[in-house]
Length: 460
Image (cartoon, rainbow, N blue to C red; front, top):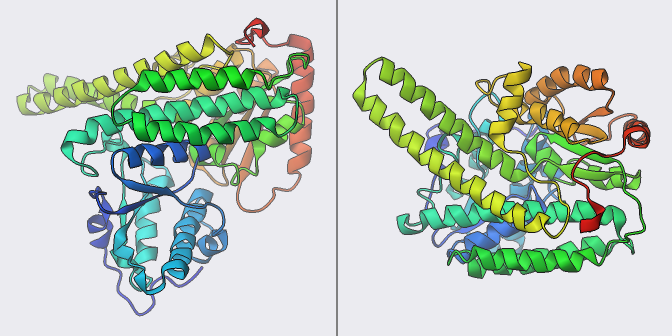
């Protein structure tokens, strides 16, 4: 690990003054790539609202990330630290003396609770402050505590519209990903689906840049339907259905193809069709969790007869309930249109996931973290007739370790193949053997039980 403090005193005030919500006007907003399509569409949406947003190259600066971390951080911290340092290095080489760190704002959200993700931007602030001149590069951070509110990064008049368009871009990115995973295992010509999705990712980016600010979301949905109709022509309908594998786990690792060593493509090469948990599910979960906390606070203060606090929590409850209602409405609207054209797996409703946890008495949403989504997500996959489940997470990730401890005995009991896949930058010993063994078990499960769920080949 590189010595971060070199003859300098760490200015801890920087963690609050240079990490937070900053107006992005006249700045270059640097977005790390987590999910390729999602990051691209989000950046395009931001540009439509006048924010100069750019998605940084990812995984090219991993050596830099390792140089400035100890290895005790979880893997996404190493990757994203490397991404921002690599970008700065290349930008300096390109601009020379014209490079001004103050022109850039690095976009790194956070989460509260025990997950180490909540400390990424603080640690990266210390790293940037230790490098000459980079203390001027601010870190824009949105938090789960206010449901990733966009207040402060753009003018007040545009905040609500940007939030709606940004959320919609996340849902559409999920759709394009699910279309990729639905078509690619059955494509007539290998490689066609990847090229097809790449082409339409750029087309949808342009659509969000022009249509997002004016909220013409129906026109965007029309474009999605056109994409799906074209995508259906890629499918070879003579290829029979394949075992259906569900993925849960830590959001960055399961979404970042380099970090998870292209897991979905490898599973497909062994005969799988894969459905990954969505990004929108996490956004809905943060709104749901904040609504849940506001209701709890309201009830507690009503009992204690504290009118000022009652008013405060009532206001929060109405706000978060409105956010969640809009998100679920918009998501349901898109999936309804899409699934009338092709059989894609629909997203999980967060309230239903909590209901599963409560009925099975496995965990509580009071604890938080992605385990609250992954555990019932696995059980929902079982209900829907999936033939196997993979849990993807950074090595030593606490929430996913909790998921594994609770889920693995349940999967053994019902006889459905289950696999933990922890990741760091190394290749785990026996990884290929583990994946091939898992897929052998999934193939056998598929032969015995088939797929009971969403697949209706008449709608291909």
